[in-house]
Length: 354
Ligand SMILES: Nc1nc2c(ncn2[C@@H]2O[C@H](COP(=O)(O)OP(=O)(O)OP(=O)(O)O)[C@@H](O)[C@H]2O)c(=O)[nH]1
Ligand SMILES: [Mg+2]
Image (cartoon, helix red, strand yellow):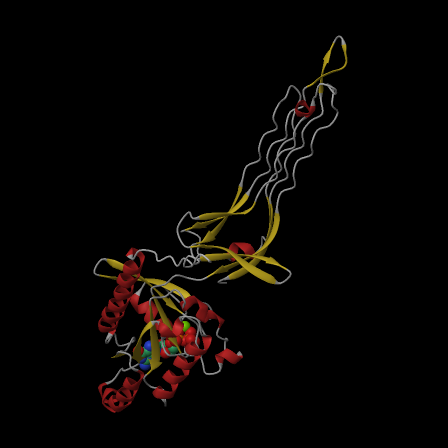
């Protein structure tokens, strides 16, 4: 099962306690203080890893504790620090701290090996060597270690695909992904066969593009119809959307309107993405004839339209080339945005009074 949201609790290690110890000496009633300091508790950090594909690991493990620091020893011996604990997540994971049902974002891990500390280990306590003074040469006080931080976290994962295929159930989304990539999603005649996003890598001109097929979307999905619409969040990072329409459906125009409306209702940035329409199942020449006027009607949506037949291997190359051009355009504009100098808006200086 594809897991894209989990709640976990983390507890960093406590600091080891300082020791109140004494070295026995002949003429001193208590001996000289020699208690060492405790070691530091382990931190917990979350790290993004390329080879982790989803949050499935957290279905069975939701509590994470780092080890405690070791206590200080005699002869001023410092207790050893505990090792940090790394929690591995897929690239594209956002981490939120949760308290009293409120969530605050801590980090958005977008690169391999990017990490963030989510709970700091407690400092070790000081041993009694630190507390000797001129008037108290044999202090019996030593500090306990500090407690490690605790937190409840929410992890949310969004796949990062270049292209997302969005369409009604049965329109052929899985068939298309299987035809273009090595992905092998289940293909079947009944609706809602695909219940989680599926990823595939499509190669063109020695370049690789990641495509994702989303579960079937229907009218009123935002009201919970069908499989709902929450899976659309996986399209938020895509550079292009392909609306896949069943060319044998009774009303293609209405189907496309439903899809576009549902995407707009999902809000966020989805409706501003580059999109195109692929009309599938254009298998036979006579069907192609009859369909021309319907295809014309789709032009009102002001998106490029490509007619394809996945089963008949027709139009696929044209679709792939056009979609990848959109992705490349977006990539170029993202790069340009990164090159533009950061604009800092400072409040204008206050005028001197008088
Ligand atoms: N005639 C024809 N049938 C097709 C074509 N492409 C896919 N199909 C058939 O349409 C049916 C649904 O295909 P899927 O790929 O499972 O559709 P889907 O959009 O992934 O469906 P869900 O996962 O249920 O949302 C299958 O029986 C496919 O064989 C095509 O080009 N022509
Ligand atoms: Mg499918």
